[in-house]
Length: 244
Length: 71
Image (cartoon, rainbow over all chains, first blue to last red; front, top):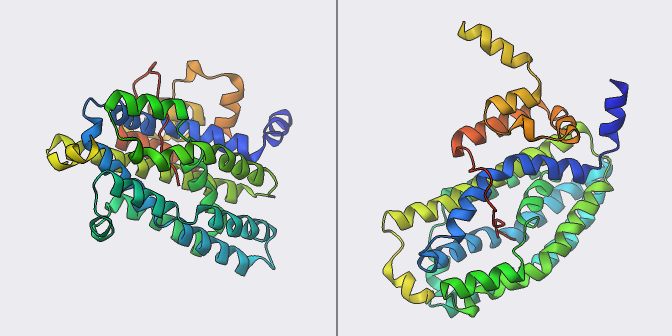
């Protein structure tokens, strides 16, 4: 038994989190595969951008809320003190990414005002809302689980190029994705490096993992909703025209 | 009988519980992975099992694309 404890102790927080995410990820990868290999991906692509915008529009305020919560705890909590600085920097890095997506959507025919007026899926509200709850009422470290999932698997430039060509998607619709393909590997490395520097308790590690699992579950649900809307004919023919 | 097997599962290792729920295939795991899985808390295991029940099993042996989600 002591040997086992020693072995686990030597595993970094980031390695443990990656291993936990790998256990939960197959459900998301399955629905993601079905979406990206769908023969009518072009018709659904504007819906995907809308889903992404629904998430990204909350990024800066969510990260700032976590930063404020961490700052309030900083005097008595070393983890909070460290992550408050990281969140403050990261919020700046995420600024205007929602505007990039709006520009991409406008470039493929969506009206900015319509996008902003449309109600996002409850799956997105659950995804983001839970993060506010954890960050404000439990511990702001929770956001690491969310960020590790959302920034942990960025698309590669090669993948994006293949998807664009195969489905005849306009390059203007993928500009934000291309930027993220370049930025997120760096952000992912920062998240994991930061995590490894923190004196996490078992409780906090558990919170990060539960947050990551919740993120995987609700992203999967949101992509599944797009597929189901398409199957039920709710993704309109206009979207096809906009996308191609 | 049902409650007997239920209590048996409660005492089972994380690997057995997750394999029984279809979250993982135990024989495909390396020893290092098993050690990590045994370290999972009861809450983490419960969420993984709940997710699997809700979303169903992923097809095996497929070359997956990445999720392509980002913030």
